[in-house]
Length: 376
Image 1 (tube, helix red, strand yellow):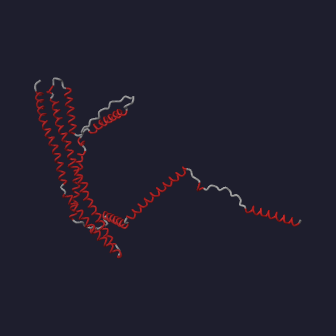
Image 2 (cartoon, one colour; image 1 turned 180 degrees about the vertical axis):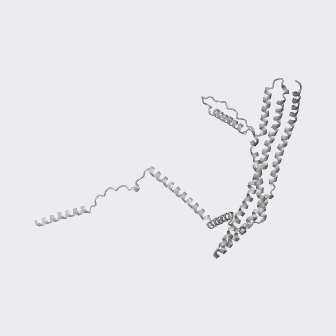
Image 3 (tube, helix red, strand yellow; image 1 turned 90 degrees about the horizontal axis):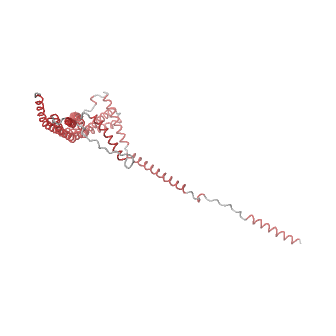
């Protein structure tokens, strides 16, 4: 009995032990795995905004890099040594010019330019003064109103007429298709030449019409004043046309080439002279530097003086050539001849036109005087 009991206990114990061991070895159920952030699909609006921001950033970055590359390229192309030399020379020239103006430089320390150069310089200055003097007066030919007597008064009247015409034209074009009454567009104000001959012509015509409108029916051809005014108007009508032709000819054949000579040929010669002056100042400044240089810099200073001397000689020769070219140019005399021709043509036509009508007006004057002296 005891043996059976022992076997049972052993079997039960073994079974319990086996079950316990099996429970310990069985894995516990794993918790649910949360979704990975990387696999979560973002909203469409967030993805589009991110892409746009990335593109904008890349564009800004590319633009900044291009700007930096251009700046680097421009800096690499600059010769800082040459630029520094130019700045130094310019400063030395300014100091030298200031010292000369203040009288701190003796005359023997100033480089003397050739006499031929100085003579040509004086002649070019005189030529420039002559151009400016005549141009100051003849520029009036660019405006036809230079002899118009009532320019301001008629300009105000024309301005009023122009404003009225513009208003009526605007109303006529913008009130179409509406219930508002549309005013008939007025005629544009007549354009009139504003010269003294044209003013005299209009005044004589107006005076002749005024006399004719008040004359009685029995006067007829006996109205000698009306005839005289009509003749005077016809004479000045021819002078008016000649005046416009004169102004156009003066502008084309005198003013334009005259100004071209002043602003081109003479200006180039003067610019060459300025280059000579700067070169001379650089030479004298280099001589002062050589005079004050210590023994270690004597050789460099001497080379600077030699280079400055060569530069001055070269620029002086160029300036002499340009000044001779300007002074030998026949264009100014040709232009002056064209001015005289235009004026002569105008005054010739005016003399002929007024001479012809003067004879007829004189006949009317004699006849009127004879009639006036007859006994009443």
